[in-house]
Length: 94
Ligand SMILES: [Zn+2]
Image 1 (spheres, rainbow, N blue to C red):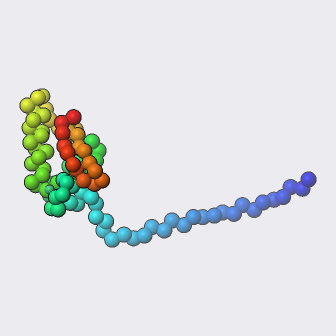
Image 2 (cartoon, helix red, strand yellow):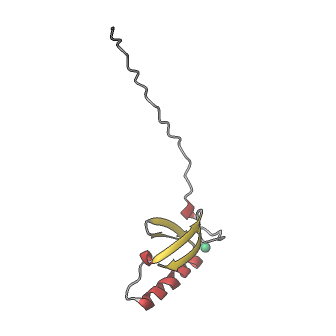
Image 3 (cartoon, rainbow, N blue to C red):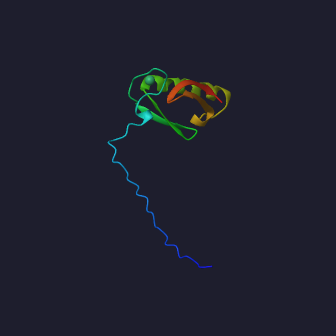
């Protein structure tokens, strides 16, 4: 049997990266339910970024206050965020 030499084709895949115009991130806007404000504050809760306007950030403040009543320290990690798509529907204490 003859051995056929196969030429290996080097197929280089071209990765073209499209230049995007400044991408808008979900957290550029307040993500609380139907809020349409731009975000004033971006917080990281359990490794995820969330944008909040001042008004809705106060909600987090209030919840953190409640956490403080229960224990001596409160952090954003004590919160549980419920989302639907990019929207926050609900925030509770873990
Ligand atoms: Zn808001």
